Image (cartoon, rainbow, N blue to C red; front, side, top):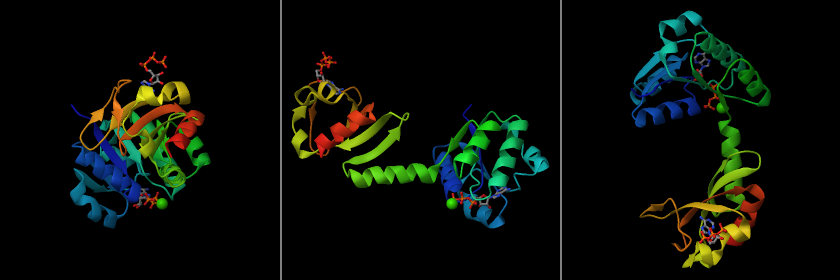
Length: 218
Ligand code: ATP
Ligand code: ATP
Ligand code: CA
């Protein structure tokens, strides 16, 4: 049986998470205290319910503990976000993902049992910054403080060169995990595979090494 999701709080972030899960063919129950938000989202999820998630009785009535993952997307109201998370934990929800407003909020959430805390605005801000500084960078995923995965658009100077000709691992210390273009994704590139201008390279490495490689690509 596939996973069942509940999303509490249908602001821009919560409704986007709910809609995406539903589009991926998962069952999604969306909850918001505000009736208007319910009306806006009725057609994009499986069930849409008006309820106050800080009300234990209401959560029990919704059978919240039967959901595999509950996303708490209440941003502004930190108190409601914390109370909701505690109740979900007490009711035995296995995986609780919570959107945090700031570091302190995140710290509290982890203390009371959140499985994962997300900072959508901070993360998107960082992405946009990377993209502004290096337009060749399409996306980046932070693996830890030191390591990341980046998507880099191959420039003119890489055209018709292979990984071995560019000698990427030896020169820059990073690994090309995949090469994408409009037609296909090569997920285990061979040292002799040709790169063309505009191909997207998915590269993993130490941030310092990735920056060296980015500078070379530009
Ligand atoms: P955005 O993702 O748009 O930035 P946000 O993080 O600013 O949203 P809010 O707009 O504060 O978050 O809240 C998101 C939603 O959570 C709102 O639609 C609000 O009605 C809902 N919400 C707030 N408190 C509760 C509650 N106790 N129970 C259920 N839903 C709630
Ligand atoms: P190495 O000792 O550097 O791992 P190798 O003996 O495994 O190299 P090849 O796999 O043929 O030899 O690759 C030769 C060179 O081509 C590597 O040193 C590296 O610079 C580059 N290269 C090959 N594949 C990749 C890759 N996926 N990402 C980055 N560079 C690569
Ligand atoms: Ca907001």
